[in-house]
Length: 548
DNA sequence: CGAGTCGCCTGTTAGC
DNA sequence: TGCTAACAGGCGACTC
Image 1: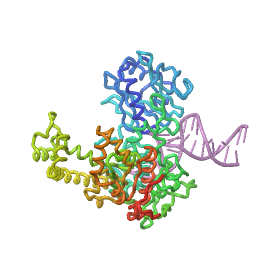
Image 2 (image 1 turned 180 degrees about the horizontal axis):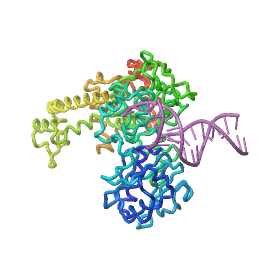
Image 3 (image 1 turned 30 degrees about the vertical axis):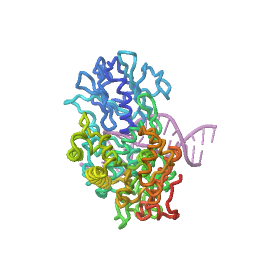
């Protein structure tokens, strides 16, 4: 079960505990460990490794790499399904969390100093070990034929498209093929396919560019999030310190059959695909409609044992679904000063949306060397450059505040550049197949940008709370804060024009609940674009607040 | 070559 | 309660 995020987590937790250590003894207690290593006996392995130093551990796909110094050999470990690699203080089994000492111990490696070591524990004995000798032996065939690293910048959606183009097998099976992309197992293929809105039994070659784009993005996002959460502990997995992974809480379909889909509420189903079980949402991952798929041999007609009649591809039932994955939903986020827009944006991101912050773009465009920076310096003079070469924002703000003409001049430089970048970000989200893009634009209404978005969300907070936040954040007194608020477009008129309102006047948890509820609602509504504007949403509330 | 099936392995669980 | 059978899914070997 350790897939890429789990192995990466093990690598990271292992690194500080093994790097630079000298190997004292090596004991192979499970001979099956060496089953793929040609001519490598436990004795020969021990002879090669003993007395050598370990370099920082590496990872490739689901393989863990322990380079020996001086080189060039490298230990290679695959944890199979239930393997655990634990850094232990005494390497005697006494402090292995969760398991009695010595049970299922397959490999024991002691370091010369400090009495520390490594243990490989594997009840099911699917783990294996190998010794790479560059130039002479490149490791087992599965290792040398590994496909690209999914999180490497070198891997592109085009490459994925090329690897899928010729394959008739179900997309789920092709993603499990380590030659296509390295590191995906059953958990993350299910999760990526769900996020991309793709049925696991779809023929790989029938995916169009947009679908491949969505899949590519989903794979990278789900892996990155899982690594950040320390991997997924479904049953056996532990990191090198014996700790469980937290991503299990964020799984949306894997291990959730019979439970409601977190996006649409339909019941998650299980299906045999290529001999593996696939979990999916029959509504969010409906097969595309259109002409009934021609009678296909082999695919989805699971072996007669298919008690799951769900293998028949004709219909994806569920509420009013066209079967066509809708395009990116672009939502604008705005609100009063210090109303908590950024926190809300963060909650959107955590709920699975891609997010963009217009202020961050301004910040970036005003960096020295950028055309916007150069234009500002040319227009206002070098006295607005501080000693370190960056723009003197404070001085510029002072000038702009006092002279409306100067403000206009500045805005004429900055705004078009920001808008162009926003346009590019929206375009990129569409080509990446992102389902929901949320863009924070503080001056959304002031600049008349409503037309750019499918819906606009306004964040509100009681005025006193805004004042309080500004006092703390901007180091000004309460009167000054009130003055600044008065100079703005009144929050009430933004609320009046809003499609959805998030009330950030309560606890952060309450705000997050509202955001999560809204995200689910948007996911549902995006199947019918005209309902996304909350004001026309069923229920007919004129300005629906989101209540969890 | 690609696609599919089987075997390896054992702890857990569903069903009788 | 105790038994069997199915299941979990990493990979390689094998067949067609």
